[in-house]
Structures are given as C-alpha cells and as structure tokens.
Length: 81
Image 1 (spheres, one colour):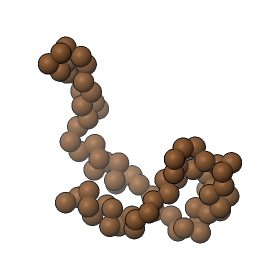
Image 2 (cartoon, rainbow, N blue to C red):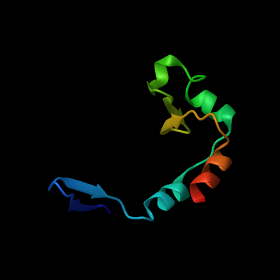
Image 3 (tube, rainbow, N blue to C red):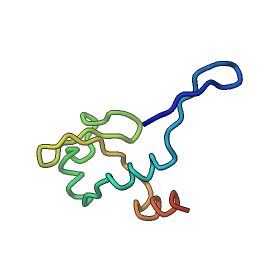
C-alpha cells in the first residue's frame, strides 16, 4: 500500500498512494449524533482517548469517534476540492 523512498539526506520517507484518502473516505460511516452520545457515554472523560477523540461501542463495534466542530459533509467537500 505505501511506498518507501529516501529523501535528499538518505532518510526513509513513507509515501501513501494518491487514492489512499479516497479509499478511507469511502469506508467512513456516518452516525447520528445521538448514537455517538450513547456510544461514548455522552462524550465522557472516561472515554476520552486524546484531544477530541473518544472511544465508544456501538452495536458491538469498537469505535474511535473524532468530535468535530464542522458539518461532516462540508468537511468532506473541502477535501474533495
């Protein structure tokens, strides 16, 4: 999936294929906010993994939920431009 090349100083530099973000975008699931509140125990500090990332369980599936300040559709469209 990724390729390795050396930079000008001979250090390894990892590169991802250009379509990598597209494949991630296609695998993203969009949930209702209420579902995410339940999964993360109302975005509890007990579930906080980092800055704005929370651990959650929804339908038996372990999730990492990134709390965003923007509308997901707007953010996806900005990346596509």
